[in-house]
Amino acid sequence: MASFTVPRFRIQDALGSAIVGGHIHFYETGTTTAKTTYSDAALTVPNTNPVVSGSDGWTPEVWMSADVYKVVIEDAAGVVLKTYDPYWPNKPDVVAGTVTGTSSTATAAV
Image (cartoon, rainbow, N blue to C red):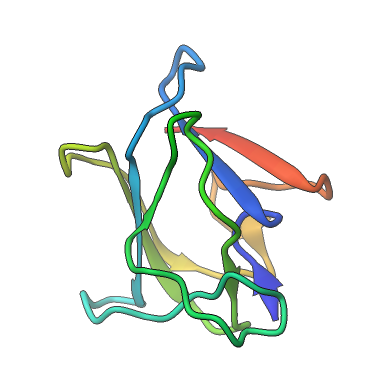
């Protein structure tokens, strides 16, 4: 198992303001075929796809298998803010701008 967001993610604009109702879509790499993420580290409870940020910009927990994903981050209106393809959950530093580090929560501007 791996975590996309260590294990949560905050969608924010370049000024650090939360993006309420932002979407994070998870796909098979190179496609628009939805790929499952989970709300628990045991990978037993699937998330909705897309995962939606709350009123504070934070998503619920997002846990992924160790497979390669395509990740698309959108604002509440569905405007694409960032796309990571491929995205390796076990190697987040491979893609510039992705969440890195070992904290229990992470923030990334889009």
